[in-house]
Amino acid sequence: MKSKILLVVSLAALLLFLAVQIFMIESTWRLKEEILLMRYRNLSREGLSLLISKKKTYGFEKAMDVTDKFAGYLISEEVCKLQTSFDTTALGRVALKETYSIMRKNEMLTSFLKSYMKNAGYDSDFESIIAIAKLELITPSGNLILADTVYSQPKKNLIVVNTFREEHNHFTVEYHYLIDLTHKNELVLKEALFSFILIIISILIVFIVFGVTWRNLLEERRLSELKSDFINNMTHELKTPLSTITVAGRTLEKEQVLSDQQKVLETARLIGKQSVHLNQLINTILEVSFLERQEFELDRSGVVMDELLHQIVSSFLTSCDGCAEITEDYHTDGLKVHVDIVYFTTMVSNLLANAVKYCEREPRITVSTNVSCGDLEISVADNGVGISGEHLAHVFEKFYRVPQGNIHKTKGLGLGLYYVRRIALAHGGEVSVSSKSGRGTTFKIKIPIQNSI
Image (cartoon, rainbow, N blue to C red; front, side, top):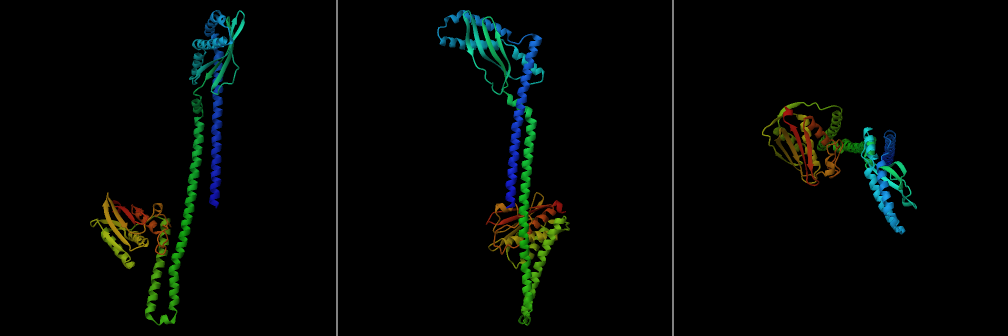
């Protein structure tokens, strides 16, 4: 329950942090955008002031002269033909289009501003826009309004540089000169890139830390459950021989048993057998505890691998009263390998014991050897219940026991395969497992031959 509450609180905090970072990104973007527009507005107006003060021009003189001639032509040739308001509207459209074209072709302000900004070290890739707000022809009979629009706020990427109002011989015009930063987003991104990178890195770091912390929490929880299972299994394993010894001891106190020498011997053998089993359990626990504190110290000696494996198999069959059918298939041709005989024997015996434990029918085991790429390969295959894919990655972990099979046949402390892996690694090798549920299991141990010398 506590872990669920912690997860909910952590996720809520993570989402809140993410929301804050998104807000910061949006705020940074808006701030950089405002700064960029203000910078270009100030630069363009500074450039216009410089043009007027030093060159005594504002860039539209030629355009105004050409437009004045065009307006004179309209007054002399076209205005006299107007009869209705529709004619005036049509003339206004033509006049606006032509005036706009004349101003675009003849104005010099845009080229000057681009040069000015480039010299100042800023991006000069922008387009200029001329928006005519009012256009009137000055005729002998009075002013003829061809265009009169209400000024509206321009789009966000448009910057108003200045509004001009001029009166010439044949026309009056009011127009706005604007800069269009069509690539504004690219410029803003370039300005804010470093800030965004820092924000994104901080988000990634927080998510990574959260993921690692949560994974460690789950791992600790899993290890805690494994340790709890180990303690329960150990308690059960220790109680079984102790209970048997206790019952056997009480049996020996009975007069009818004491008078029967055969029963006394059977009871004594039972006590001895259970004492050995109890001693093995305690030694296993002590050995694993010892191995956790320090590395293996191997006492290597040269042995013929085929002969050593045959001895291990024979001893195992004797100790379990022929509990399995074991096939030996060796292809090492009398290869002599330097290994720690005690640890090596324990490693192979543990694999054989597991093959018997996790089998619901008559155990059939194959022990084989081979030499490949300079490695001694030892394979122990069985016809047991197998291991499902979800458990294969954990079978060599300390205290881990696959939750399957007949519980009475699979008693143990979850240390056997962990011990196997530690011994294999101590010899400079490795151990792997392949299995399918219901189709048996194969363990392969690889030991480098050159490392064993």
